[in-house]
Image (cartoon, rainbow over all chains, first blue to last red; front, side):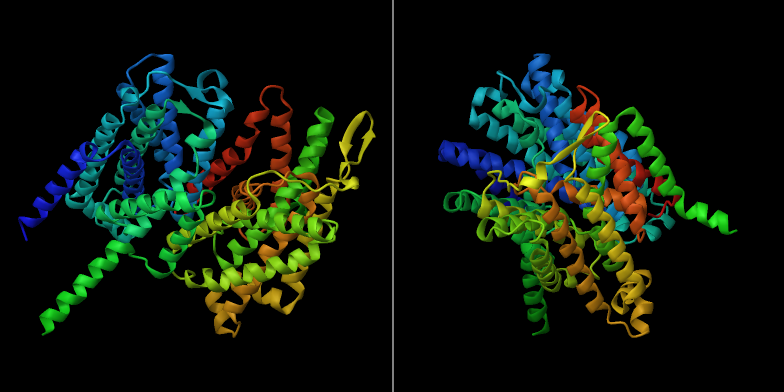
Length: 312
Length: 309
């Protein structure tokens, strides 16, 4: 068992890296989309683990996208540098805002992040000279010049990086702080956990991830547009994916992104408009009936079996 | 003593009237337009204050119920030729049943589950409503024409629409109706008690789950009134009401829980503020930021005053 787990991870990783060799372009584009949403879902879940529900995912995603495009179009930097700048700007803004809004809790934090995402969009739509206003902005030097295999490997690297960060949050000392804040803030505080510091740290890290993903997504197509860069899809889908897979874990959002990502491609074919309704239904059903998601259900199944075996 | 309490009670209203008069002298259009728009915001915000104050649920699908109401009014108008204002009555009943049904099927199960599940659930409901409307009616904008909606008058060289004053009338009517309901009827008094102290209300024998059901139903139903008055003047598309969720929450945050009159006052104040920004040439696009800016500012100020918000 001890060797099986790293081996499994290696096999999955190798399969993911070699994917472009065995499949055609259509599947690679699906895989890129799945990786994008997987990373967003993971970053959303990482914030949720502190007990704070953020609705700002789409906001930082859009900010990153705009930063990347502006850097590439107006300052002529390489798209990869633009992506790094996207992460930096998203992280910097998250740091400044986080210092204020992370004093809020629960409902008020959630609503404020939702409002902030809208504020970002209004500001960007009105800074005509810098952002192109409501009509958006395009750039000609896209990421790797539309070479989808390279984009895929790049996305995979970001996704793997996010998984590693998420696992670090789960395994190192910081996870005691994060879990204790979620479980009981007062107890955490009285045990000397600097809640505020950890919340800001997690908020900034997740925002950097969202900014990087936003910039990558924008630069691979070479355009941004307020309504699509800040689209609620980048909020709705990651939440649905994390919920389906199972929140408060690394493997949950990954599983959820793969399940929903693949099924959404199929749904798009049979139901071109309004297939998003399925995501809404999924959120409602999971919240009501399956609060631990698929991963939680699998885990519970094995736990039950183990217990039954032990009883015997 | 008498005069002090009188001053305290009507201080906000007096300030509001002064504000509107001042703006009316400076920018008459902004004052009238803001008064009309602001009343509409208040009309949509009042029911959210009820659900937040009494049921204790932040309903993120608030605005989408409004859109749904608007589409139902539209369907009445297309299929039966019913006047939008007349169709308020059937839409009120339909939305009440729908709201009560949604409450019974979903929300009642997360009442004790903590804010995270409640927010996620209503967010999911919001997405379902939005996408179902997209599926049924597509995103093509529609409209209902009634001849009286475009009437206007000119007073002292300022031309403005008269139909929109109906928003003011309806907002005040709904406000008074809700106050009477909460103070005078048995059910209303019970709701008031549940809002103040659910456990205490339960102990004295109030059927809290029934009160929640009715209050949630009425809140959704009131959106039907807003829908009825909005239809003649608004382009109808699936996300027409979406922004009202945040706007309503902003009003509730400004007024404080349980302060219904405050909703109307803050609604009009923000409506006027929005109209002023809109009237500045070249900066009209920034007007959307008024609500969000005020919302964030209000939440931040409250959190500083009371750190355990």
